[in-house]
Length: 171
Image (tube, rainbow, N blue to C red; front, side, top):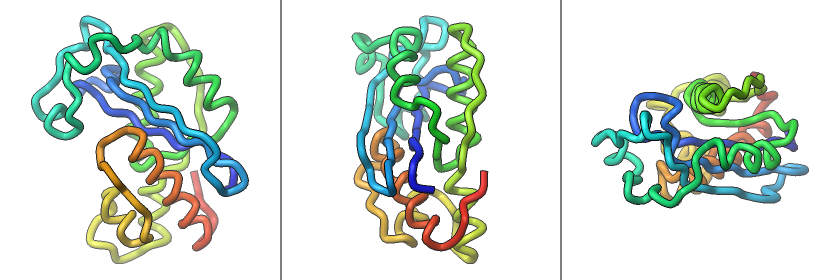
């Protein structure tokens, strides 16, 4: 797998459509070629920033006050992704964020995802757990600022590249 886009979302609360940050990392020919990051202002009904989520990622309602809504950012994100397969660590979370945020703006689209967590379980048996920091440590991949959407997307991209050297990645 040499061409893909890694993606990571952070959310304001448990509602997966409450995305407040997105990070994207485009990989071409096995090398990081481009990145994209934006804060996102959740719509009014989704803009309740849960204490736990804020504690995890540090993003508050005040931080996103002037950020674009998903409806305003979607076309730029979609253009960045193009027709790429998406890669994420714990892809079920990021896929559900993307699908649910898209649903709030009337967009229905299927995305192909590869989960680095799932593939790490298969290709790196015996780790204590398969959380992002554990897998990055096991593969000697950098993770500068866990729960920063761009840092986590970059880590997922680098994990996918490292795992691909160990075996074929599965969807």
